[in-house]
Image (cartoon, rainbow, N blue to C red; front, side, top):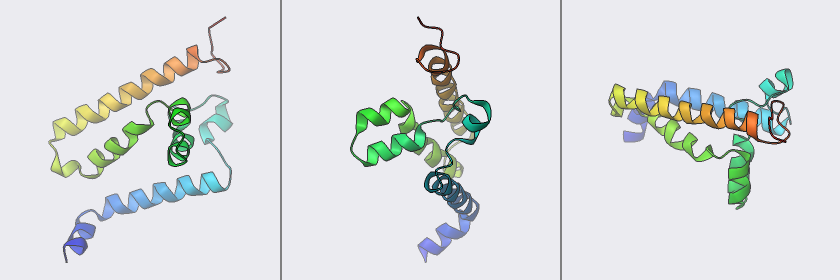
Length: 123
């Protein structure tokens, strides 16, 4: 009975999660890759997240951090957004904006300071 109540109260979140998981699975198994990168030639802000989790599941933690150093933030962000009604609106907003700011900072650093990126400014 409790599981049924949980599913009813979080139906939108569960359906959205299933849709996102399905989309990621289709892109991975169809070997589509990053849509943003295929259009612009520049990796998106989350490029490497899927490879990071695959590396983590394979036991290669260093490769996981190489593919995207913030991949571990996705799980807490997802949980906070999924259960946002359990937290104050202020906490959810501050947490989400902090994670987004961290992703933007890493994205900019990767664009300008990682060799083989299109905007690399190193020697």
